[in-house]
Amino acid sequence: MKKCISLLCIVLFMSCNNAEQAKNIVGEWECASWINNATGADNCNNNVSFNFNEDGTYSSKIQSANAEGSYKIANNLLYCTPIDKMEIAVEINKLTKDTLAFTMSRSGNKEVMTLVKK
Image (cartoon, rainbow, N blue to C red; front, side, top):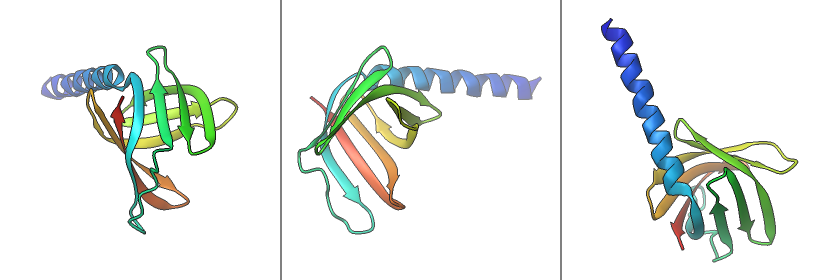
């Protein structure tokens, strides 16, 4: 019985956390930093922005590339699926009402992007 109650508490906590993250991610975001851990370089260059909508759609601009698609948050991961492309997942490090930081792999290199809400 204790195991069932513990499992139920974990599930409820995770669903509440996902709901809070889903609420916080909605809005327009701009890049504050984009650090490549291998080189220490900041790739932000004021050319990165995201817009996450309440209906689960998003748009992004990364340098000269624009993308649109759908997104979801589950188990502290942000999944983005650009139109006609494969799903991409990044690990959410921090998501508050004004800061989104996540870790991703680009060409096998660990990179951390931090966005701030406009």
